[in-house]
Length: 260
Image (cartoon, rainbow, N blue to C red; front, top):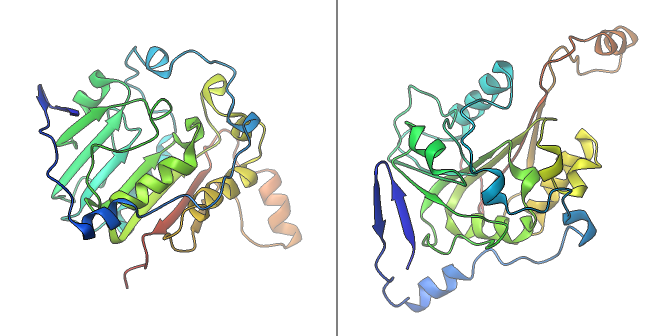
């Protein structure tokens, strides 16, 4: 049985009915076909349980307003109104476009108080994905979109989580993983801590590519003040670009096929 937390309520989900042969095949979808990280790359400086680290609610945003605007715009372009959305590793805000109505938004995180504050969530659940890297309480093909904002750096077994993401997505469903250069340093895995922004982008690309069934990942990279060409003037402008602004990175992939 799974504990399903909602806004001000707690329910025990009944055991699922026996799977049909087709459902069993769907449940096996998204198997990991290769390992991306070595054991050393998965290590953290702070090895205390994540549930303890996140026990105190942090009702703050961890990126600046420019990053949030970019993220909301990506969601606006990639997640149609009326979709069913799973917000993995969420918090008190989901950054979904306020003018869009969705059929259902389910949040996941490690702090129930934060998730209770999130007005976009219809339901939520609390689970440590590093202790149990599965979404076993969610049926296959349940969501049109899965999003994960500024949290992928904390996953110790991302290959398994991305396999689960593909399993719960409907065909044509989208997964959007966004991040910047900020992190809780001692809780980020070594591969992330020791990498550059470029290597972190490639790391998330590899997470998608490790799972059979995802489309070729797309990369969105928006750095405040950065001019994207190779002229001398552009290089000089990039050198003197506004400091202190959070770069925006997103890696996007679809299950099976990208909708036209």
